[in-house]
Image 1 (tube, rainbow, N blue to C red):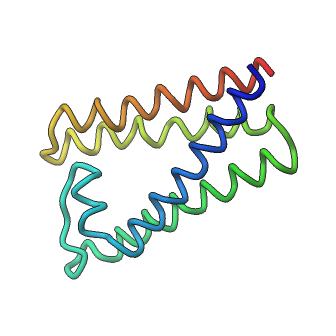
Image 2 (cartoon, rainbow, N blue to C red; image 1 turned 180 degrees about the vertical axis):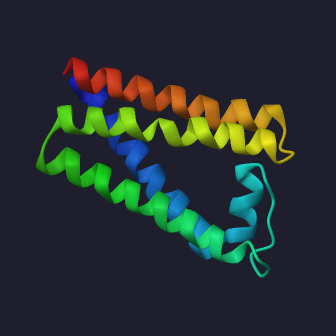
Length: 123
């Protein structure tokens, strides 16, 4: 179970880094994949950059916690971070995104993050 817990945590942290990169350097496709398309050259450009920085930073913090402090700190981090995809679910629903995207991507991500937290707490 330890290998599974650590592997899932690292994969989720790396995925955050990937999302951050994508929102910073490929904002239009990233926004479309998020479920609420936005024009990166219009007013939304700054917000897409903020999202990219937020996601990338979360990935770095997660990896640092896991490496420097250990599984328990990472578990608490994952538990807190699960709030973000839960909120993203509501954001997509409130802004005209599809239920499939809201629940199939964002809510499912929250569930996986919570599973990761539970596995890390069990280590």
